[in-house]
Amino acid sequence: MSAPPIDSSGVGASSRARIAARTLRTDRWWRAPLLTVLGLSVFLVYATIRSFVRSAYWVADYHYLTPFYSPCLSDSCAPGSSDFGTPIGELPMWIPLGFLVLPFLLGFRLTCYYYRKAYYRSVWLSPPACAVAEPHRAYSGETRLPLIIQNSHRYFFYVAVVVSIINTYDAIRAFHGADGGFGMGLGTLILVGNVCLLWAYTVSCHSCRHVTGGRLTHFSKHPIRYWLWTQVSKLNTRHMQLAWTTLGTLMITDFYIMLVASGTIDDLRLIN
Image (cartoon, rainbow, N blue to C red; front, side, top):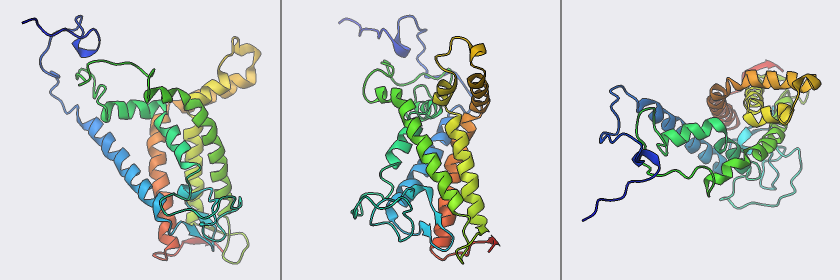
């Protein structure tokens, strides 16, 4: 009986050392991928639940609108929460009110270069850590479905910029007092802080580096674009930290607005 053929790629390649053990590491190499899975799972579960519940997402007195529902363009939206109109009619309960932008924002995160590394290693175990063999015998790269969609990251980036502009409008709108004039509360500061970090995460994207400095042969002939590219490049070194921070600030922002909108707590007012 002939021996089974040796794979020509992956960990079973004939050029690889024949080591039966998955790894010879003795440290807790599994901790990083485990924490990544837990962190991503917490956000996905929370965001999914909050996107579908359709309650406590709008504070009419102070114009607080959670990012998970912005922009709200349906007749199903709470009165006053639709500054951009309601071109969409009533939506059934199984469709989130933010269904127009949520898929694009999810696509932007899923195709992000950092998140790819994070869930490739932690979810697909490809590979889970350095010097730890992955369970897959072959790798086709991002050339087939579904991974070929990763190449559309730059287009998701363009939509993310538009959504960040809308979130900025929501933050400015939150400078609203109960009497209709200017006001500011803790919710206002939370919304402003969240949108600032979302902008930092968005413009630190590798696609933004390409937009600002890509396709240039001589930087010296384009000093403005070169300056923009250097600033984006500096911010890009913090892209991983911003990717995680913004997941946290999105949940904090939504959770605070939920507490105020449901009447669980009162907004801490600083002005008016």
